[in-house]
Length: 493
Ligand SMILES: NC(=O)C1=CN([C@@H]2O[C@H](COP(=O)(O)OP(=O)(O)OC[C@H]3O[C@@H](n4cnc5c(N)ncnc54)[C@H](OP(=O)(O)O)[C@@H]3O)[C@@H](O)[C@H]2O)C=CC1
Ligand SMILES: O=C1O[C@H](COP(=O)(O)O)[C@@H](O)[C@H](O)[C@H]1O
Image 1 (cartoon, rainbow, N blue to C red):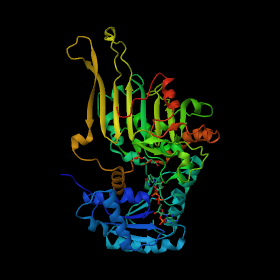
Image 2 (image 1 turned 60 degrees about the vertical axis):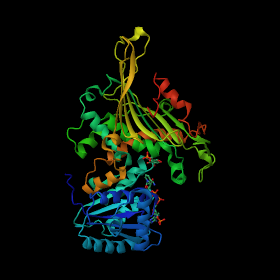
Image 3 (image 1 turned 45 degrees about the vertical axis):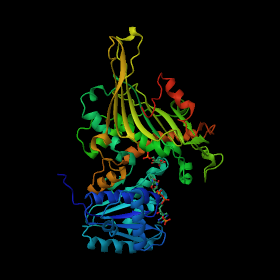
């Protein structure tokens, strides 16, 4: 039988009326409650400026769960744990009231002083809130205190250092949970297991046997309502600095000596330290940027990025990035890790393709048949699973070969959907497991790498738009691999 920890905590949610809270956080918390992973000893205080009383807020949460989550019988019981305070985070007076409410709920629900402060709001407020929490005594508690902080963590290395200083004035590094929701995805968490629990992969996982690795995260959505943030960020800061580099670190890291937070993070950090910096003119050789023009998606015409609401007509912001990382260490010298990510692409898909090197001599070449390279495909989303591409004998022939795929899908085995990334990450935070959150060293090294690219791109006007909505990105992204003798494997392979 599954054993559950009796987790108690107050969750103080800043940005309680926002999009993230509504679409992801309330449904995920409810899933934890529904499955018994969150005991009755919890309370949530929602904080945002708009005026609401507890009843209106509970209606909001109910609506969120019924719209975006799975409803069950105990929804009303769950909702009774929610409280609301209208509060401008810049207003010092509000924190005193907040402390009174929090102390009262601590007593009512026997929360033992455990507090999670979740900042689901614009990053410009992160520093201010963290400082107020300390100054106004909310962090002064006998239980644990943890700060969950959403992305983006800074805009570049300098702003990230500044933000980190402010946060660290109130919380120790091991109390800070920097969210990267890709680290909560089932198959991203599976990378380590696939690598380190399989004798058939680990000995081959190096430059002797792998020719290249491709990570694609393509989206069909455009910028939607987020242009004010996105146009200052672009795909390199929005996706590459965090999600893509995290996936590459997991794929490339050495086996940790133990499966502890510190050991795993320390191996990931070593990968980021070994990344070959790409600067100046080299940026053009290693990275490609794109911005979508208008196009047809699902039979409907969609506008170009520059025609989206709140986007300047001459925007130089990239909505697509393809790039090549080289990791200068013993294991990976000479093996390119290609990544690509973009909005308004042909399909919504995240997958990882590990392409193995050809065998030294193809005994079957005389037959005129070509051998396909062995591939390991890790399907992250929308499907979850792995596919191994092998060559076997063509039935009934003496020398002919044919490719076959061995498939594993998490859905077909367990028959259930795996939990949402946010559900897993919230649970980890409640349990005090920071393994799947980003350590400051990882954030800093990722920014250092990405800043060199952003600097070049900011100073050069791009010839945008350069890919049609509904395509797989600009032609230059294909050429990036072609010049190395490779090509992008199809995403739904
Ligand atoms: N939405 C998403 O899918 C994702 C979001 N994120 C990150 O999560 C964070 C939140 O994003 P999102 O929910 O989309 O943002 P929204 O703009 O939808 O929500 C912002 C929230 O902050 C509140 N707020 C704004 N100003 C103040 C203030 N001065 N004092 C108190 N509350 C304030 C707003 O409520 P009110 O107006 O009532 O004050 C609202 O609840 C951001 O850091 C974003 O980058 C990360 C990944 C995905
Ligand atoms: O962090 C972000 O991720 C989403 C894509 O997440 P996914 O889980 O749907 O793959 C992206 O749309 C957004 O721009 C970015 O901020």
